[in-house]
Image 1 (cartoon, one colour):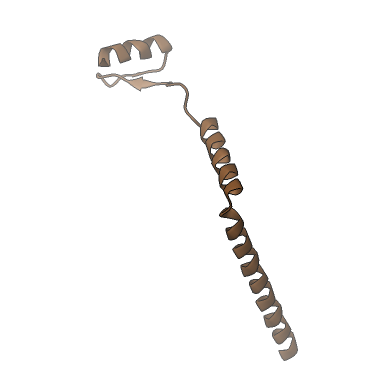
Image 2: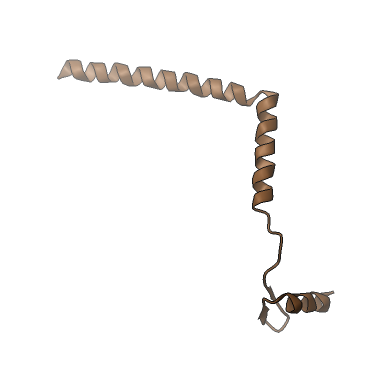
Length: 80
């Protein structure tokens, strides 16, 4: 049983060192300009995809919530 435990410990150390080496390689790759540009483009696409393009409801001064387009426009006119 002791030999199995030693083999397990050696394998675990080998995997952890390989994992650490791969993490360092990935970190170095992230420092390159091309990866930074790709990451920036990916982030801007993600933000554009989730951007709110329309206001769906608004609460007036009286506390009433309006959801129709005409009512929202009228409430904005009141605020202005």
